[in-house]
Image 1: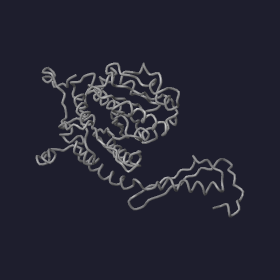
Image 2: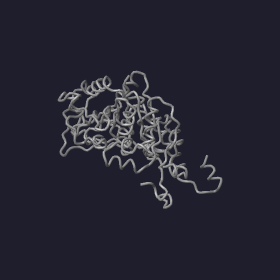
Image 3: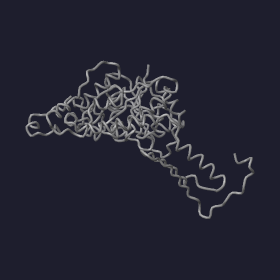
Image 4: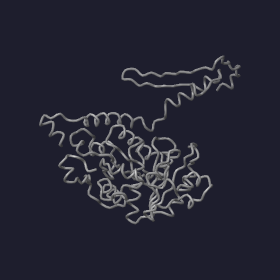
Length: 97
Length: 271
């Protein structure tokens, strides 16, 4: 009310309307994401499981990052292998699953 | 029937501990039996704000682990005989607090008090989820600032999904408490207004605590602001909020600082 009055009077309004708009857009997005399973977390665990079947690795050195963009989204997987890592001996096919 | 109230926010430094102390004291000043419980394991501060830091012997973790009885850990306020404090532990082991332990203590406190007020740590990790876990009601402390409003929204989502009540298909009654509010700046459009915040969070308002030097002065002394200066603007706002918690219908106003003649003449805020 007072804001629109100020605008009518041609006075410079403060930054609060910008804050309000940014929050509304952001929270609409974040609320939509809520309750959905944690996609990055699931991907991280499964990637870790697959790789560690073949190579011994430190779970803390596995980084999975998702970047959602307007036109393109990326999934970044960064796995650091220990110095002189060992390839695990091949498991029989029936134990791979 | 006892009520368990969590004071939470997500973001740190918005006034959870100050509000826990002030609301707890205000309810006790109105004759209710109140215990304020510090859930900030590792970084306890409610004892300091309440002025009881030198009287802490046993704490929440000691009770959870069976080292001390609840009656040994509870500290009675020196000014109000029906106000008690259960301090947090300073241990670094955050896992010392267990869901089962919290459930047992809250159930025990329910039998002894009218109000059990849980001061949540900042964040959305274990400590914060345990503080809200068995709550019937929640006060979400919010500053008129974008990051605080965003975090409050996140916490509201957790109150609706991660609490024992939510899991039983019931609701936690939620209230927004806006702190550090400067009505002049909001009027000029420099600060998010009350309507903006309530629109965005879609949660009813418990009260508006004005930005005031009385709040810092009270915590310096170690006294809830409602006890230290009951006539001050923030204290009056907390008293109104406490009455609303008790179901009273109190008109919503932003209490203002009463400025002395000389201060007004010099354009200074009341000190």
